[in-house]
Image 1 (spheres, rainbow, N blue to C red):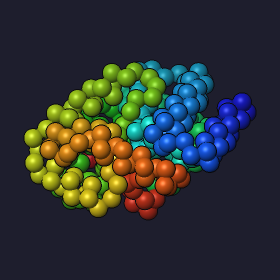
Image 2 (spheres, rainbow, N blue to C red):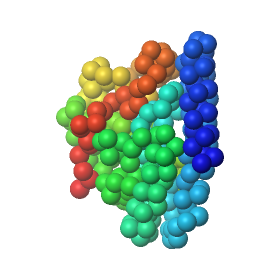
Image 3 (cartoon, rainbow, N blue to C red):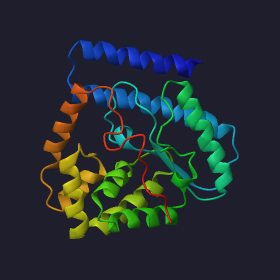
Length: 239
């Protein structure tokens, strides 16, 4: 109940600051930091109720991964795990349901850690990203880009760091992927976390300028969430 009240206070504070005309950049950074703290507490409490054997890392995705949240958006998260998948899925389901109770709605596209598609081992995540990187279809890349903004939120951050290094290594110099990604970015507002590094390595321009444009968009559309996918479309399943 205390966490539910805290989440409500964060939303109230956000509305007040928006009404006062606070710049989007400082506002989203502050709100994201508060949401991070709340989510980390939810994860901590859920972990205490579970016997998790093996390393794991909870990933924030989309606007949460970019630390660009304003008003409440639905959940976008995933899990890197090493161990009994069923135990981690039960843990993730608890976290997702508790976050929903705090006012962070379940993702209609099911981009959540409790979905077996997005609760994977490090090797499985590498295969998924490798498939996305090698897929030149702009729409598929657009969907996959949700995950390019991943950020470790809890657990062993080295797992996220190793995955990030793999993704950057695979995209560096991949001209076909860069062309498709640039085309997709022209058709919609691009995610600006890891994807900025990828586009920057492909000659995609100044990442700081793109981030400023995105933040201005956040102030114009404070309820926006994923930014790059709709509820009716889901990234392809890993193979």
